[in-house]
Image 1: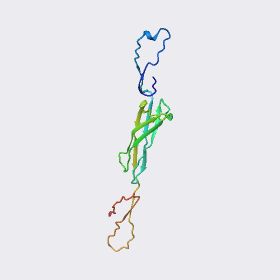
Image 2: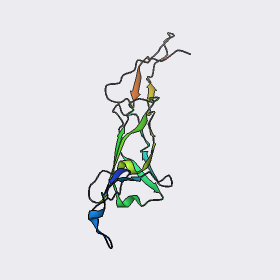
Image 3: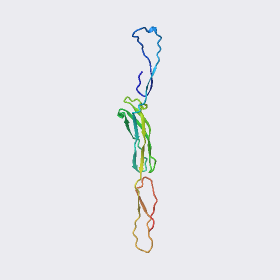
Image 4: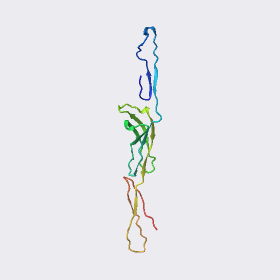
Amino acid sequence: GTIKNVGKAKNEVGEVTFISGKASDYKINKVFGWLEVTKNDNIKITVTAASTEKTYDGTELIDKNANVTGEGIDVSLYKVEAEVEGSATHVGDEGINEVKKVKIFDAAGVDVTKNFNIVPVNGKLSINPAELTLIAGSEIFVYDGEEHSNKDVTPVGLVGSDAVKAETKGT
């Protein structure tokens, strides 16, 4: 028998040819053995989910990319498919970008994932605060002995349908 990938395979006795003596003088019992390939602990494939950040814009941040590196192996000889899942929308969202599933294929397209020690490394998705400027209203008054005010406040930098209520305060 033969075996290439991690697992077990029967190793069966095939055709028997006597070099000397006669086969008819024997009752031949063929007992199979086992061939086994185990993972090589010196080979590791690390799949690192992307870490990304952006300024708050009201939309979800998603980055499904991953970086693949190998220790004791040339990963460019394999096709690695990584499923990465995570999202963040608001400042302070947890935003873990998690490696959920990894599949590794050889040049022939055979799934050889079980042959490798895979080290998943999660990434981080971060939302940074957007700039919001609140401009207090300005107005010119002619002195008349009365108190005057302008409670208008104009927000600049709000995102999407976000809204604020603000007013000036007296001195």
